[in-house]
Length: 238
Image (tube, rainbow, N blue to C red; front, side, top):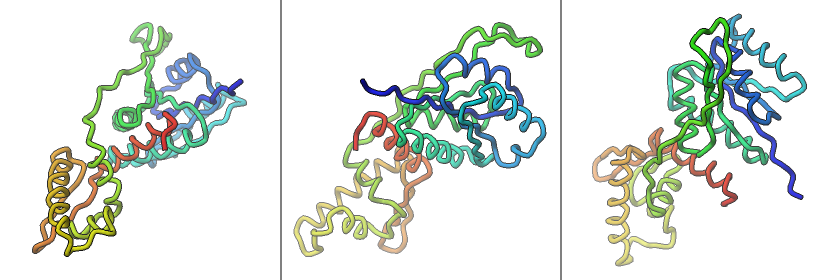
């Protein structure tokens, strides 16, 4: 009989603990990862929220992570790295945004969107925070993001730290193809077409320098690739 996966809750924390505790308890809980933004982990009120959650789930495994405050996309990448680590260890991941701050909530939603990891929030019985009662939880739907072709995905993967010309990219994609080969110019034209499409999707950034085209992944391109990687891990793909 296959062993059930551990369930990990990634929980951005703000200044309320009751809604987080109540909503987490609606699911199996084996591990909780508390997410705060840099600097807030030292604030007394945030420390109290963290301690409230630790007390409520005493005996469970609770970790703490910090992410950047101002840069939503960088925080998304950091959350995706945390998700990837948990899935690589055979765990199921859920994100709880019941009590997090706005910026980190946006980052969490983007991470859920690209990785296809479940994200949920609380539904309170009333708007009175002084007497909080949980009515239920809402599994937040994610809309489908634009898919790119397998060729474009492969190009995006091979960009790595970027390239200083299309010739450099060709050498990565097809190392055996020589410049004197009649197919070389066709390959340049093919790559130019795909780079243009990737730029239109905001997955790459380009800069013309003399006769060369410098191509780098954008932050969105990095996020997209990490999401694809996590999604494939969940589906058991290489």
